[in-house]
Length: 413
Image (cartoon, rainbow, N blue to C red; front, side):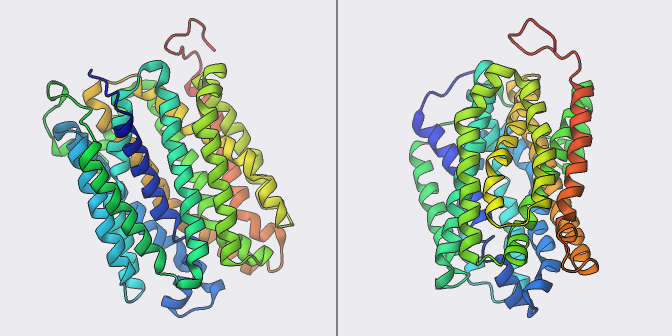
């Protein structure tokens, strides 16, 4: 495998992921208000629609991630990434002019198609990573996503005074600038001799998920990854409504809080993941993150003051070591010309969790807050359910990795 040493190319990959997360996060602070306005319902009623609007993005990402991953295995990472970045820029412009809720949902769906660039970006990182650096580099992906989640909600909150659509215009500009930058600096990471024939049966989400069977016992790590992201969706989908209704936060306050979340995740995944994995190993790092998530989710459901949301952010950020650790374990089991397909599977699972999570947890949120009015436990129900899922996931990873020996390690855990 030919390694790409260009720092400019690596920066482009991380910037691309960052911009994708900006696009996702930039609308979150103002989304409740925007849905309320376009659906012509009060803010409290808008939570019924929020999960489905967010799910449109994830559905398209689920459908197209395997296709994009396999196209990148056939034609290389560079052309697929550049097309995705350009398409995202144009789609943000469409959403800026969207006249009603239908067009907003349609725009989010198209964003999901181009947002599947996360697949080829992850494959690019796998291409250029040595085994000992793989977890650290996947952590950089998380850091880039976290930085984007700092910038996105912060921009969305600060620009809310200029209208709920303005952030889309800014996101379109950033994506177009990144496309031009990529045309200049991005090099191909997958040599011609390592590419493989494109096959439709591998390029649909269900065909991609069937490929999981090839990984024998480690295939259950894909289930661990899915369930981990599913619990994360509880926080992502309820944070703004939860804080607005329980603590009476404004759109700007929501944006600031999400920016802090992004900073903490960026610090953990960009600066600490490699060190934690190096010290504990991939297996124990993943287990630690899942163990923390159980108590973090319970804590989020029980807190009674707005400042407590900030107190719980740092331990919540530490749960972000799970995904890079799992990706590192599994990516070490496949050939270089299968990395695109592998990352397509991961992205499909992520998207599937993002399809199911927001409607599921928002259903629990809306129904329990109305059936148990003025109840702290009623509002916190989604977090308690997510904590139970995290507990099951922790038990599953313990069983799956029992006796697993890491590359470069002579001991079994």
